[in-house]
Length: 432
Image (tube, rainbow, N blue to C red; front, side, top):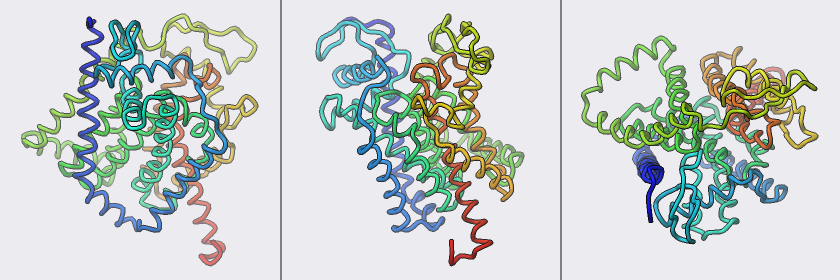
């Protein structure tokens, strides 16, 4: 077998994601008592955990009974599965151009990183190599994303009602149901992002070496899901600064002092080194994709959704203001369910609940939490709307809305909680 530079690079990706994944699992084990204590402090008992599990089963039941497993993104589905097979046999997740059933003689690095292939490889090892296993693995990631919406919303709001309502909205979101089976990189990134944000919130509450290690490994693992996953290297620290301490200004000052205090601590430096080793290959890969023209391609036609019946614009670069202007109206109209007739569905009631949630959070003293969720949502709305293929009308790329589904569901959870709170004031606890 001959190796190209891309092949050697792919072995570095394998090392990076293995360190991230097993580091994250080890960190979760080490932090289990801290997580358990946090759940108990928010009043979460066995009955409430069971309720959250039952909501996840609503998603599972709806998916099994309504949605038929099928490919939707040709030919990426089969490429990810092929990469997973290469990873199992060779430890090298590249797109094979020429090879046998167990060996690749010539291949190239795919434009998306190793994350989806790695998760599919786990599924193939456990349940056998088949398309059914690929669909099942993606389905399991969707169910985990629904459940992690509950856990993330719980740590963010510290209220069971907000968390369970957020999970319920997520469980019945059409974008979740439609994209739970296909083997794309969007569902893995959604699931990993919820896990990473949850682990960041655990660290924010406990601030010890085990929870810091776990949060950093979760963040590193997340970056391997998609090229644009590296955006979370900025987004998650920003969320931490917004939510930490009593104010943003105080958070910046206090965290700078903490950083200076631990800068010579051996354990802190070892954890930081492991994080750099884990995430380094993916940062290099993403930089190559984003800054040297491999992320998408120039010359694609982008429909001008704000000015119907006019010629499409030609994308001069993958991400720019011209693309943003062209995609803006379609990506806004999505949230008022303007494309239900062509099966791009976002229930208007869910959007209305999110808007109510924004108003409730602003009025009820949750302004910093609202700001954090807005940053989370807005970062990916801006990114995908500026991407030439990021409009919901561009092929099957409404799948990108998966990255916005969780913050929108959490806003909706606050909205439902706000409605219940207002109803209690007028009707009393006996009726609500």
